[in-house]
Image 1: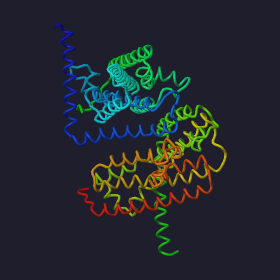
Image 2: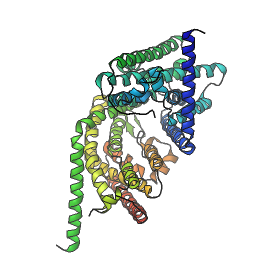
Image 3: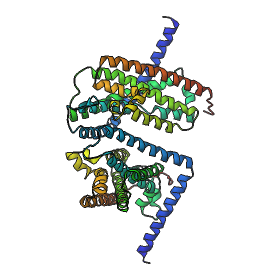
Image 4: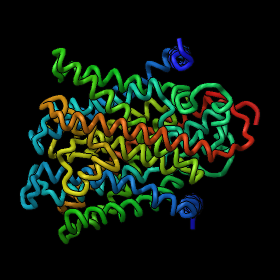
Length: 268
Length: 272
């Protein structure tokens, strides 16, 4: 086995160990775990109830029907869910950098970004993920092809969430306290992924497929799952890869500028 | 002036002082709050696009009695009330849990009254900033609201709506006397306001069975009634809405007073 292979295998074992520890830690307070995950599940159900009321009055909106919006929620909540469970620190990078908590990760012989991302598991994220799966089982195409496309949609959606937030969080290396901006980006990005892309027109639509790539998540139920469009699928995969790569690059570039404080911090 | 009148005047002065202090405190962070209200602009923009697509851009079509323009202004009015309210439930829960309530109870001012004063002082500034920001988005996207008495009816009804929101949230926050965590209860309250209050969709557009359920709950009096009268003014409806809000305020004030009395009687604070 070459040195490179050994390094990869070590990183993989490190990831597995992190996830195992995170899960054990979350399950330590089982009732709290179930309550938090359940709350997120109920929250999403209430949103679906809103859509049920909305489509009860307006059955078709820009070609979208209730079933499409249900799949949109399955993809958006499911993608956000797995990203939050496995890489739960992705919305907190700005806080970690600006508060000097990064020192702890720098002192460990593991890839810094991966270490930061995996060192937390979001309990509410598991509620989102389970919600995504149940809604897909309720409204989706359960054939092997349908399940495969849903898995791809989840993958793209989760990677986009991580990529966008790593970029927004990395701004803290340059502008210091970027928590406000990162939290605005986070809230706005989520808000834009839970509405059908079909309702947006003109410049807003262009922005949603470029600067803020929420449009790729919003269009997934149509472009990938209902009427498979190879060009859209390729663009969505490409966009998720690009945003993740840009995020990783910015984080790496930012690390070179990082000047630590003298805060004593522990991993939590 | 008799003794009772002097007492009432004294209470009123203290309440006003709390409102003034909370307002000035919020004013110190006005720039931060104006920036934060950009989230409302985004939400309103997205909802405007959603309803614009639902109405296919037809400004004359009325669905459930609402035109596209009225719906967008309705959303501005409901969102302004919803987002203006400070997190009073969380504050009460914290004070009960960490014992700070003991300090407040020693002051010659009603505990709930103090929080109401702070809520109104903070909420008023936030409300007007949010209303102005929302009105700008609505004006630019669908044009001005038809001239009429709507806005004049909305402002006092919105204040009563804020009072109702305060009472509901305070009732939940005061449950901290019995349960450690009230966030779950507050979450349920928020979600009920979201649906049965008509935050994103007017109650007239909901199925009839749900409209009947909503009519028996206080949530519509907090959001839907002020917003509906703001966009579709009707003098008789105004009287009915106002009476309904006052009746709910009276009922919830009694409930809050009852919870507070029961809770405070079993309070034990150690140390200090």
